[in-house]
Length: 229
Length: 265
Image (tube, rainbow over the protein chains, first blue to last red):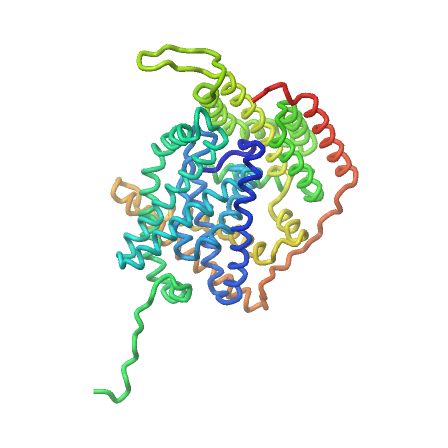
């Protein structure tokens, strides 16, 4: 999904920066607040960042000026919210551009939008609906992570199709979408399964932290009354 | 882990090349301005100029071995080449360059598809080499210091530093666990391999997080208040380099005015 450095010409690279910057600024505001109210969440934040970094560096080449890989941003959106996930994605994408020469600086706006905003928002929405509908958390997480991942690729296809809208935007969208779908559908299912495993681990070992962040509700255990029957 | 090895090599070059001690501001200024010009102007001469200047800087100023530079450039170039061939052959509209009658439809190659493919190829090569100049000459820590100097919100730099540290914790722990599983025949059959991968991915997560919590506790015990203080002994940006960059950028702008119609998209 990382669009290569320099692949998007004027005006597309500026446009995606313009779309992403407000969301990232809001994310920084939320991040600032979270680091003041719950400083114990910082390791979790950094962990999510590193998780996104590692998963999205496992790339398969794709012939679209881009590549295919899991993103990890869906799980992050569920655990720490989509706004902060957009900031983490920005950091991760800068690291990948500078450490692995993967992605790029001028395509940062477009890549942050697809991996850090579009996918996570969808993942978070699915998770919220699943929680409201009392669907078991593992199914909710699976759907959120895998559909969020797929939506990231739909967004990338749309970004590429806007840049090369010929013969028409929709035909180009379908061309790019088909190329991505071959590798991305199995990857998205894999990412969904991984997210379920990791979420269970987190829920098991970091239950209090997750309930502070209002991700899960911990059943309140009432201490037995002294001198009761 | 080929990615890991490539990353180690990049990191080694970034720390040991003759330009690593020079100011990150001059390098960032050169790279960002050249990148913006490269992707914003339609002229094909501009990316070629950026490519050659970056290559000269990388090979002669930073003394990066040519084999390594070629190795870094070859993988993205191959992928880009394929992508651009696809763009050239399957995209475009308007004036047709060639029509190939196939049994089920007529495959038309469009003139503007081919020009878009070529223009994209040249533009990405220019931008990539420019990015590689920054990647190969500037250690990550210097970029952090530069970011802090330009008043990026402190919390952003802090989380970036933590993520940077965690990436290495992730890699270290994965290597340890893989070795341990190898030794206990964890990868002896297909089934045990799946089980091993599952164990690693779950435990890796918790291990890394606990390692991070311990680090944070240790930092808190030493009076950590949300700002990580770093020694900021950066050299002053060299005036000559800044002037040269401005000159180079203006030449690019001039050239692009005269050559903008070379590859009409």
